[in-house]
Length: 221
Length: 66
Image 1 (cartoon, rainbow over the protein chains, first blue to last red):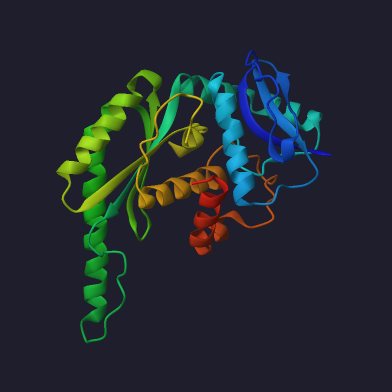
Image 2 (cartoon, rainbow over the protein chains, first blue to last red; image 1 turned 90 degrees about the vertical axis):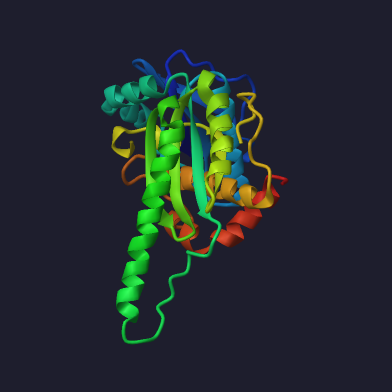
């Protein structure tokens, strides 16, 4: 019987009573030092299904409702409690530091989409097609970087940290994540809403608040 | 979206819901704490997101009752 990791929290973090995870398995907490790991038993590595993903996310959000947690990536399994303690022990200071950085904050995602059709740079025929194709790609990157700067100028001062990806997908010029303290969330969302009206060529969608998936390690910020 | 924190969801339109599901997948399968070598999924996360996104977006939407 292996253990599925849901989140890592402060050692004092109390599990909400009766909270269960995937397959309605009860959750338990394994503590080490200043940290605790929230795990649930699982028979094997979990299968990626829509229902499992949604249940996992709901479970982590329930845990977050009782205090700050570091969410685990879906499918992170450990062989037994000793392995959980080993994880908490070997990365104790790094995890405690990450927990401290995200305490009292949530992640908000801002994703932009172009309103005109710039997603499909199919290679046109013709003698100068290659050059045009490359210039088109450069132009799309330039526009995406510009848009990222506009978004950051509008909301960046409200965030503790940011993680931004340019052209992560052809249809997504900007995919940004911001770590925002609780009291600033409403203003962040309001500013995003107002910002969209000032951008003629892109739509903005803000989702969250999420557990701080994009801010659990320093490398990702 | 997070309901436990008590915020109202800013996601309103159908296209925005799709984006919310993509954001969910991005986070659960590519974010969060990992243990090197211990991630074992029945479906490879990256392929899932890149290749079968449309199918999964629709399916997650359905599972979430949206």
